[in-house]
Image 1 (cartoon, rainbow, N blue to C red):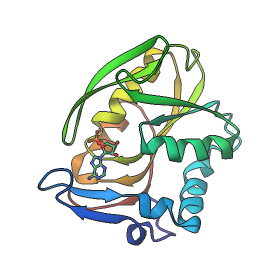
Image 2: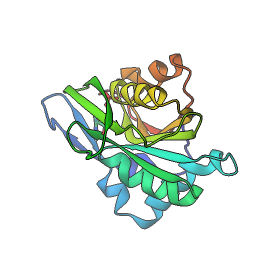
Image 3: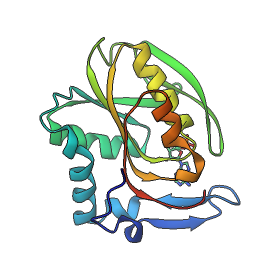
Length: 180
Ligand code: AMP
């Protein structure tokens, strides 16, 4: 379900043709800079998981770090980063994935999550779901119990939510935008 009580669509800036022609870039820096919008977004994202014994928030580089850090604080959970290849200093697990506009690899520290730990995954936006699917694979490789995946923005026409749901992951988003 997408939350509609707060007008997130108006506070998110859209940049046409960035970083490539045809992409409508949904820029959440305008949401993050607004105290009420930022707080409301984090409050809504964590609401279902209060009292749910979430042990870790896993945030996808880089905007997932901003949301995930705040969510972890709210839930008194730990935070673990999922980063682009080569950024994490200790032993990692790695997976390749395709973006809406490119291909990349992401990593997590091998000891970031223990088997059976209850983890909520987060990022700013889900488009095709390729990034989040890769993150789910990494978390499952480490034995995580994925409670849910949370995003501020869903681009439903790109099918990411359905892709994650087909993997058995509960998806929570706050606002939808049509198109790419
Ligand atoms: P995807 O793997 O296709 O679901 O793409 C999601 C990732 O790419 C997220 O980390 C987003 O931050 C970024 N992303 C993809 N499409 C957009 C877009 N239209 N506007 C802003 N960020 C995007």
